[in-house]
Image 1 (cartoon, chains in turn brown, orange):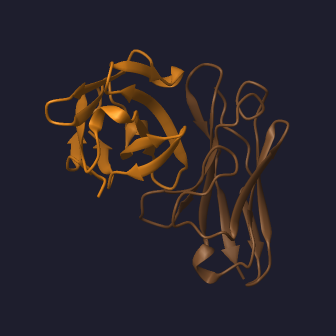
Image 2: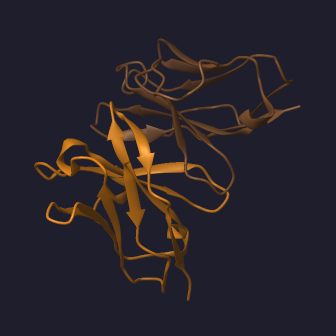
Length: 110
Length: 117
């Protein structure tokens, strides 16, 4: 199972919006609505930000939103804040009854 | 409150095995699957496998098939992950994480495993 494809880095200024893409195949992202997104700050455990493509867990800011089109899922962060600077990972359930992560995207808030 | 408490750091020589534990509390242990995820230094997250405590259903990533064994003890609400034939590339922080609607909502603090001769 190959890792999902994410851009290595994205950046934005405070207040702006950014989108991180996550491209898979019809055997994972495109085949199921079981895509989740994680935020990870250095030295910390990952934090669930989005599950089932577009659902936010309790306590996660509504500045974070998720969507999917075909084999590509996306995480959008609006109203960028300094504390959003972190690594972001997508994850998908697969046809093989396994899960697979994306390679990760480093978000820099300028 | 939900807590996942993992065992402490380990150092092993190449070829050895390691068995990590993850003790769950604050919820009904058999109600949620548990994932194991690892992260090598400076690298991304890597999914290793999942265990369903209620019926011992297990699925492993193909990469680890034959080297990994996940088990659970319902009497102590603990899951275990054993990795054998360790090599330097297995040096990583290993996390257990509770499944929530095909995502992972609670994570352990991580266990650093260092493989070095």
